[in-house]
Image 1: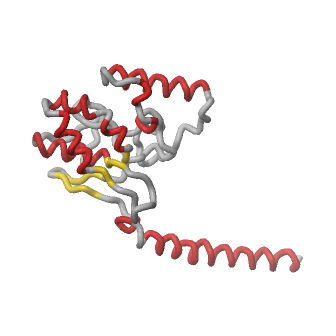
Image 2 (image 1 turned 180 degrees about the vertical axis):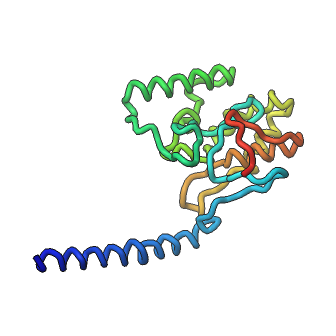
Image 3 (image 1 turned 60 degrees about the horizontal axis):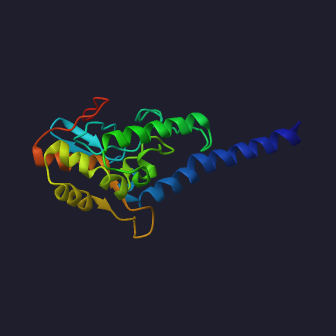
Length: 199
């Protein structure tokens, strides 16, 4: 009996020490060198704040749209669709998104639609889109706001983030930051289909 219990106890103690101490300390240490030290990035607003690192469901023509979300942008339930790229249901959902995008963006050809604007991220909460996904929406946003397209495109350029340290990650645009910048030009508070408000 001892020959079974002692190894099990030793393994339990090692796992407790590793996962409760060493692993936790390692994750915390890595977070300290990451942007914002791994903490939620909050943007102040007159009624509170918004989380800049959580995707939100902007759907008005006056705003840039984020990536689709398989969880309805619910930060308490991060997940993907778990469907493969050849799954018929998944392909039908993506086709619906493409059709909707084309209907809302006259003059844009299917081949010009970036993949990230019609496919959800693995977390369902990605707050960023590619510069291409932002620029392809510039005409719609400019028309809805009565602004020159060049001004909207310049705003996209100003909010385009380079890869971290120059090589980690992709060039990207934070949708919330971009939409807040748009609102600063018109002094209108942001809104979205989920009625999200500052936390």
